[in-house]
Image (cartoon, rainbow, N blue to C red):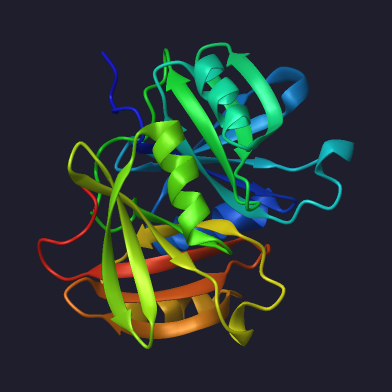
Length: 264
């Protein structure tokens, strides 16, 4: 029985060239424990756990296929049929970065790029059913947000691919925030990248890690070598968040939700 519905984010995966440093950083920041799995020629896969339950994974980027690829967190979306999702993405203008793979003991996956350039993965679990449903507890990934150059086109692409519906929230200063929904529940967010602060930033999916206190954790992360990109700030009725780059170069966000908020 599937742990997730089609269109729900189900896994978060770190790719970095300095996996040992990354494991040390996240274990301290998020209070994770890490176990490893030997993957043969593909090297070692790292499973991040919170109190013995899987919350994400990671691996060391090595080989020519990663030339020019920066360290990153990759979000995975659950689908009922990976082959069908890949074909649909192509019809909607997306690109296949890595074709469908059957990973023994795990499930099926493929890596895609939307028409604006943001990368994401699609996944159907078999032996592995994705991350444990612990969000929005501190130490879990609890929100995923698309930063894009064309919000209108991105809405059409993801609605066509995953059946997402959406609502819009005015944020002031002409900014509109899109909330994507699956079966009437919030599933992801989206903002259009307008303004000089986004110069040189490619379209991307940003992964949010829940924390108990945003300011405290950003201070801790900074002491451990992280670089703050967006200082802590409040989102009314949602929580307090910050965006930074981990010591190995991967960008992610932390958020402390106000009570009864978040993606559960």
